[in-house]
Length: 238
Image (cartoon, rainbow, N blue to C red; front, side):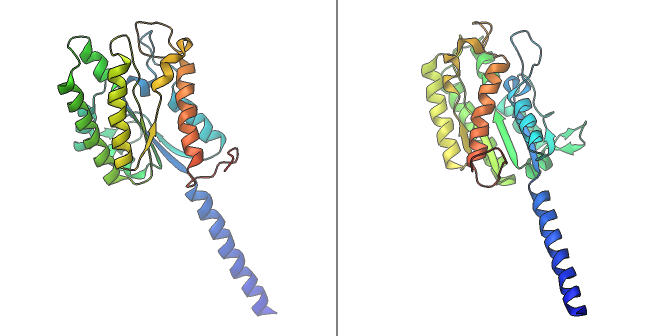
Protein backbone atom coordinates (compact mmCIF):
# COMPACT_ATOMS: atom_id res chain seq x y z
CA UNK A 1 0.00 0.00 0.00
CA UNK A 2 2.82 2.39 0.91
CA UNK A 3 4.57 1.54 -2.36
CA UNK A 4 1.40 2.37 -4.33
CA UNK A 5 0.98 5.71 -2.55
CA UNK A 6 4.65 6.54 -3.12
CA UNK A 7 4.34 5.60 -6.80
CA UNK A 8 1.23 7.78 -7.20
CA UNK A 9 3.01 10.73 -5.56
CA UNK A 10 6.02 10.32 -7.85
CA UNK A 11 3.82 10.10 -10.95
CA UNK A 12 1.87 13.15 -9.81
CA UNK A 13 5.08 15.13 -9.38
CA UNK A 14 6.33 14.10 -12.82
CA UNK A 15 3.04 14.97 -14.54
CA UNK A 16 2.88 18.35 -12.76
CA UNK A 17 6.45 19.12 -13.81
CA UNK A 18 5.70 18.20 -17.44
CA UNK A 19 2.62 20.44 -17.48
CA UNK A 20 4.53 23.32 -15.88
CA UNK A 21 7.43 23.15 -18.30
CA UNK A 22 5.15 22.81 -21.32
CA UNK A 23 3.24 25.91 -20.25
CA UNK A 24 6.49 27.75 -19.66
CA UNK A 25 7.85 26.63 -23.06
CA UNK A 26 4.75 28.02 -24.75
CA UNK A 27 5.56 31.55 -23.62
CA UNK A 28 6.81 33.74 -26.44
CA UNK A 29 9.49 36.44 -26.57
CA UNK A 30 8.79 38.82 -29.45
CA UNK A 31 11.38 41.13 -31.04
CA UNK A 32 10.54 43.75 -33.65
CA UNK A 33 13.30 45.26 -35.79
CA UNK A 34 12.77 47.97 -38.35
CA UNK A 35 12.16 51.54 -39.47
CA UNK A 36 9.14 53.85 -39.45
CA UNK A 37 6.83 51.04 -40.56
CA UNK A 38 7.76 49.15 -37.39
CA UNK A 39 7.38 52.21 -35.19
CA UNK A 40 3.91 52.93 -36.59
CA UNK A 41 4.91 56.29 -38.03
CA UNK A 42 1.98 58.02 -39.72
CA UNK A 43 1.54 60.67 -42.38
CA UNK A 44 1.03 63.14 -39.53
CA UNK A 45 4.56 62.50 -38.19
CA UNK A 46 3.37 60.82 -35.00
CA UNK A 47 3.52 57.15 -34.10
CA UNK A 48 0.20 55.31 -34.21
CA UNK A 49 -1.14 51.80 -33.66
CA UNK A 50 1.03 49.47 -35.72
CA UNK A 51 1.20 45.81 -36.73
CA UNK A 52 3.34 45.06 -33.67
CA UNK A 53 0.60 46.35 -31.38
CA UNK A 54 -1.97 44.10 -33.07
CA UNK A 55 0.34 41.11 -32.71
CA UNK A 56 1.05 41.85 -29.06
CA UNK A 57 -2.66 42.20 -28.39
CA UNK A 58 -3.21 38.81 -30.02
CA UNK A 59 -0.43 37.09 -28.05
CA UNK A 60 -1.72 38.60 -24.81
CA UNK A 61 -5.23 37.34 -25.54
CA UNK A 62 -3.75 33.89 -26.04
CA UNK A 63 -1.78 34.32 -22.77
CA UNK A 64 1.38 33.50 -24.68
CA UNK A 65 3.46 36.68 -24.45
CA UNK A 66 6.47 36.69 -22.14
CA UNK A 67 8.61 39.63 -23.32
CA UNK A 68 8.20 42.19 -26.09
CA UNK A 69 11.23 44.08 -27.38
CA UNK A 70 10.29 47.02 -29.60
CA UNK A 71 12.58 49.83 -28.52
CA UNK A 72 15.30 48.81 -30.97
CA UNK A 73 13.02 50.10 -33.77
CA UNK A 74 13.74 53.59 -35.06
CA UNK A 75 12.09 55.77 -37.69
CA UNK A 76 14.49 56.31 -40.63
CA UNK A 77 16.47 53.23 -39.61
CA UNK A 78 18.67 51.90 -42.41
CA UNK A 79 20.04 48.41 -42.81
CA UNK A 80 23.52 49.75 -42.11
CA UNK A 81 22.47 51.52 -38.91
CA UNK A 82 20.75 48.36 -37.63
CA UNK A 83 23.83 46.30 -38.49
CA UNK A 84 25.91 48.74 -36.45
CA UNK A 85 23.52 48.39 -33.52
CA UNK A 86 24.03 44.62 -33.60
CA UNK A 87 27.78 44.79 -34.13
CA UNK A 88 28.10 47.24 -31.20
CA UNK A 89 25.56 45.19 -29.23
CA UNK A 90 23.67 48.24 -28.00
CA UNK A 91 21.41 48.08 -24.94
CA UNK A 92 17.70 48.67 -24.58
CA UNK A 93 17.75 51.04 -21.60
CA UNK A 94 14.09 50.51 -20.69
CA UNK A 95 14.24 46.71 -20.61
CA UNK A 96 17.94 46.43 -19.77
CA UNK A 97 18.77 43.92 -22.50
CA UNK A 98 21.39 44.04 -25.23
CA UNK A 99 20.26 43.58 -28.80
CA UNK A 100 22.16 40.33 -29.37
CA UNK A 101 20.60 38.82 -26.27
CA UNK A 102 17.16 39.95 -27.43
CA UNK A 103 17.76 38.31 -30.81
CA UNK A 104 18.92 35.06 -29.18
CA UNK A 105 15.98 34.92 -26.77
CA UNK A 106 13.28 35.81 -29.31
CA UNK A 107 10.81 33.15 -30.43
CA UNK A 108 9.41 35.51 -33.05
CA UNK A 109 11.34 38.24 -34.89
CA UNK A 110 9.80 40.61 -37.42
CA UNK A 111 11.99 42.69 -39.74
CA UNK A 112 10.69 45.65 -41.72
CA UNK A 113 13.50 47.62 -43.34
CA UNK A 114 13.83 49.56 -46.55
CA UNK A 115 10.80 51.83 -46.91
CA UNK A 116 12.43 54.72 -45.07
CA UNK A 117 15.91 54.12 -46.43
CA UNK A 118 14.98 53.81 -50.10
CA UNK A 119 12.33 56.56 -50.09
CA UNK A 120 14.63 58.97 -48.28
CA UNK A 121 17.38 58.18 -50.78
CA UNK A 122 15.06 58.61 -53.76
CA UNK A 123 13.97 62.05 -52.59
CA UNK A 124 17.49 63.32 -53.40
CA UNK A 125 18.94 60.76 -55.82
CA UNK A 126 18.02 58.41 -58.62
CA UNK A 127 17.32 54.97 -57.22
CA UNK A 128 19.55 52.92 -59.47
CA UNK A 129 21.10 49.45 -59.38
CA UNK A 130 24.06 50.54 -57.25
CA UNK A 131 21.88 51.62 -54.33
CA UNK A 132 19.44 48.73 -54.74
CA UNK A 133 22.20 46.11 -54.87
CA UNK A 134 23.91 47.70 -51.88
CA UNK A 135 20.66 47.57 -49.92
CA UNK A 136 20.08 43.91 -50.83
CA UNK A 137 23.67 42.97 -49.94
CA UNK A 138 23.27 44.59 -46.51
CA UNK A 139 19.90 42.90 -45.95
CA UNK A 140 21.46 39.52 -46.65
CA UNK A 141 24.30 40.32 -44.24
CA UNK A 142 21.72 41.27 -41.60
CA UNK A 143 19.67 38.11 -42.11
CA UNK A 144 22.80 35.95 -41.94
CA UNK A 145 23.84 37.49 -38.61
CA UNK A 146 20.35 37.12 -37.13
CA UNK A 147 20.05 33.51 -38.32
CA UNK A 148 23.41 32.70 -36.74
CA UNK A 149 22.02 33.97 -33.43
CA UNK A 150 18.50 32.58 -33.76
CA UNK A 151 16.95 29.60 -35.56
CA UNK A 152 13.32 30.13 -34.60
CA UNK A 153 10.58 32.15 -36.35
CA UNK A 154 11.93 35.09 -38.35
CA UNK A 155 9.62 37.12 -40.59
CA UNK A 156 10.95 39.46 -43.29
CA UNK A 157 8.31 41.96 -44.47
CA UNK A 158 8.38 43.02 -48.10
CA UNK A 159 8.38 46.53 -49.50
CA UNK A 160 5.60 48.29 -51.43
CA UNK A 161 5.52 51.04 -54.02
CA UNK A 162 5.15 54.75 -53.26
CA UNK A 163 4.91 58.01 -55.13
CA UNK A 164 8.73 58.02 -55.16
CA UNK A 165 9.44 54.37 -56.03
CA UNK A 166 7.39 52.69 -58.75
CA UNK A 167 6.00 49.16 -58.60
CA UNK A 168 8.44 47.83 -61.20
CA UNK A 169 11.49 48.58 -59.03
CA UNK A 170 9.74 47.41 -55.86
CA UNK A 171 8.78 44.10 -57.49
CA UNK A 172 12.38 43.45 -58.53
CA UNK A 173 13.61 44.24 -55.00
CA UNK A 174 10.94 42.02 -53.46
CA UNK A 175 11.87 39.15 -55.76
CA UNK A 176 15.38 39.29 -54.31
CA UNK A 177 14.11 39.65 -50.74
CA UNK A 178 12.03 36.51 -51.25
CA UNK A 179 15.08 34.64 -52.57
CA UNK A 180 17.10 35.71 -49.52
CA UNK A 181 14.28 34.52 -47.26
CA UNK A 182 14.20 31.14 -48.99
CA UNK A 183 17.99 30.78 -48.87
CA UNK A 184 18.05 31.37 -45.11
CA UNK A 185 14.78 29.50 -44.49
CA UNK A 186 12.94 32.41 -42.93
CA UNK A 187 9.35 33.47 -43.56
CA UNK A 188 8.66 36.09 -46.24
CA UNK A 189 5.64 38.34 -45.66
CA UNK A 190 4.41 39.64 -49.00
CA UNK A 191 2.59 42.98 -48.64
CA UNK A 192 3.43 44.35 -52.09
CA UNK A 193 -0.26 44.64 -52.97
CA UNK A 194 -1.09 46.79 -49.92
CA UNK A 195 -1.19 49.91 -52.10
CA UNK A 196 -4.24 48.45 -53.87
CA UNK A 197 -6.19 49.52 -50.81
CA UNK A 198 -6.31 53.29 -51.04
CA UNK A 199 -8.17 53.57 -47.75
CA UNK A 200 -4.99 52.44 -45.97
CA UNK A 201 -3.13 55.60 -47.05
CA UNK A 202 -4.60 58.93 -45.88
CA UNK A 203 -2.26 60.94 -48.13
CA UNK A 204 -1.21 59.91 -51.62
CA UNK A 205 2.14 61.68 -51.37
CA UNK A 206 3.18 59.75 -48.23
CA UNK A 207 3.89 56.03 -48.00
CA UNK A 208 3.05 55.72 -44.29
CA UNK A 209 -0.24 53.90 -43.74
CA UNK A 210 -3.00 54.15 -41.15
CA UNK A 211 -3.98 51.57 -38.53
CA UNK A 212 -6.00 49.61 -41.08
CA UNK A 213 -2.89 49.09 -43.18
CA UNK A 214 -1.04 47.85 -40.12
CA UNK A 215 -3.91 45.50 -39.35
CA UNK A 216 -3.48 44.13 -42.87
CA UNK A 217 0.21 43.42 -42.21
CA UNK A 218 -0.60 41.89 -38.83
CA UNK A 219 -3.10 39.48 -40.42
CA UNK A 220 -0.45 38.36 -42.92
CA UNK A 221 2.00 37.64 -40.07
CA UNK A 222 -0.67 35.95 -37.98
CA UNK A 223 -1.50 33.57 -40.84
CA UNK A 224 2.15 32.54 -41.03
CA UNK A 225 2.43 32.08 -37.27
CA UNK A 226 -0.67 29.91 -37.11
CA UNK A 227 0.56 27.78 -40.01
CA UNK A 228 3.79 27.09 -38.11
CA UNK A 229 3.30 23.97 -35.99
CA UNK A 230 5.92 25.09 -33.46
CA UNK A 231 3.15 26.97 -31.65
CA UNK A 232 -0.46 26.03 -31.07
CA UNK A 233 -3.02 28.77 -30.53
CA UNK A 234 -6.43 28.08 -29.05
CA UNK A 235 -8.23 30.12 -31.71
CA UNK A 236 -6.31 28.71 -34.64
CA UNK A 237 -7.39 25.87 -36.90
CA UNK A 238 -4.20 23.85 -36.41
